[in-house]
Image 1 (cartoon, helix red, strand yellow):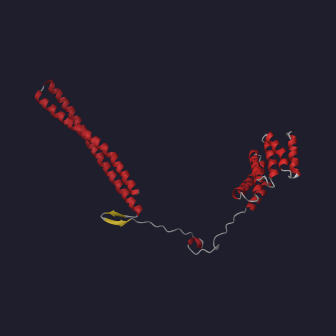
Image 2: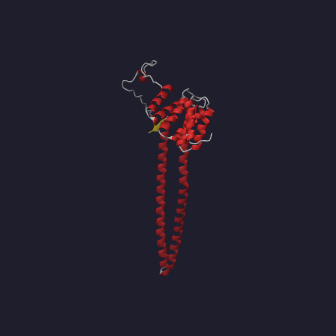
Image 3: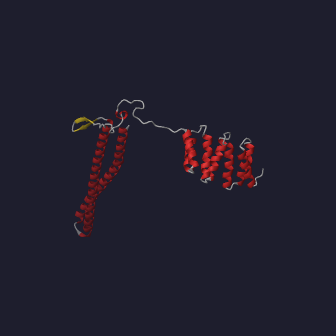
Length: 280
């Protein structure tokens, strides 16, 4: 397929150049022949006139025609030289591409009547100094020379998030809880991680992200032990964003949706609803 593509490309180049050469060469040749015929006619007329004004005019015209003829012949020679140069370049391209293709395909390359196989360069694999046996080719024994790779559990990452939020490192805490939710979405700690993610955003006063996190926790983990906490903090985030109506909806609905919620959560919701003068 590669060789056919190259041959097609070379053929296209030749076809593109050939019509231009044929047209230019034929046109110049016709002009040269016409000028030669005109010169012969003018010369015969000049001899017949045997001097005088008519003879002088014919002489001038013959001189001009002779100059044009030389110009046309010069242009024809130049065109022939350019075509010859183009033909040589195309031949060189063909030979070069043929050699390259043979080298790629590993076929013999003809040079000076002799054929030789295209050399295939081989590289030895680098070996690191003092590398373990498993790398330099020795037998691999289970766990003999490779360090043990430890993967943190969901519980470990979750605890790191709690430690960060308790230290006021809300950005770090948010990153840890996001890891738990991404890598362990069905883990038993996912609901708690979702809630504490909202707390991380709330702690850095990013109330918009906090509202989204708490809303997602309320919708996805409504039946978890953080369901009532999520709706309370959702209302508080909405309150901080100036969304009084949405905040009231959360505070008023908390005891209705979570009648078994701890008293401290229900009392907090009632207090905030009273402050905002929410309609019950």
